[in-house]
Each structure stands twice: as C-alpha cells, then as structure tokens.
Image 1 (spheres, rainbow, N blue to C red):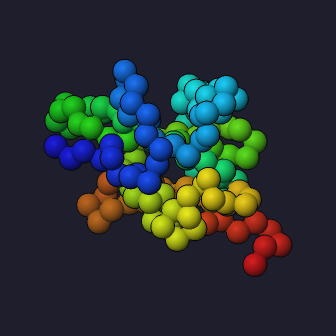
Image 2: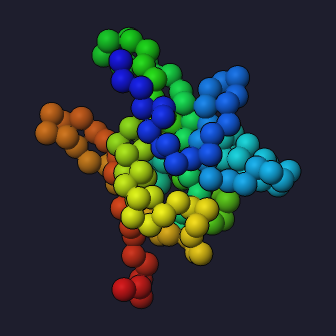
Length: 145
C-alpha cells in the first residue's frame, strides 16, 4: 500500500478528525478559514474542466482513502484541489497531479509567494499500460509569451 498523503511536504499542515489537510491558505483569519472550508466542500470535479486554463492562486491536498476498482482494497491517496483566482475550486484524487504540483512548486515557488496567479491546465494522459492519469502544465493565455 502506497501512502501519497504526505507528498506535498511544503504545505502548511492542519490535523483534523477526517485526516490531514495541507495548504498555503492563511487560516489565521476567519476569511482564510472560510476559503479553505469552501475549497474542501464546494470543489467541482476537475475532470469536467480538463484542458481549460485555470488561474491558480492556491492548492490544497487532503488525505483520503480510495477503493481500488479492480481489487476492492482501500489505499491512502490525496485529493488535490486547485483554487482559482475567482475562488472556484477544482478537485481530483490523483497521485500524478500531486507530483506535478510538487514539481511546479519547486520551480515557481509555492502559491503563498506568488505575486499573481499562474495559468495552468490539467490534461488527461495514458500510461504505457493504458491507465489514465492527470498531468498539470503551465497554460499560456492568448497574447502571452
């Protein structure tokens, strides 16, 4: 059993009864707590927004358990939530998306250090064995270079 729940080690960590939530949202204020709660509770399915430019301002990772569709085994994974500049949130359970965000944060810094949103898009790819997975990449907007 692989535990991907701690893959985003740079995140602020808050332990809750439901598991670990990692994020860059300033929760020292009531407004920040509302933003985090809203992202966790109201995130849309990322699968419905593949290939769309999202102006990311934050990211959240929540430790979750998922059931393997083939074996029925429960495994630990991470629910990844991308928060856009319009306060909409988009979620998927995807270890590869989590790894992609880690790589992005290593290059661009973490969201709490950004001066402006970063335009990203999430795409669906297939592994050599035919398994679907999500990948994140910078998305240039029309007119950007």
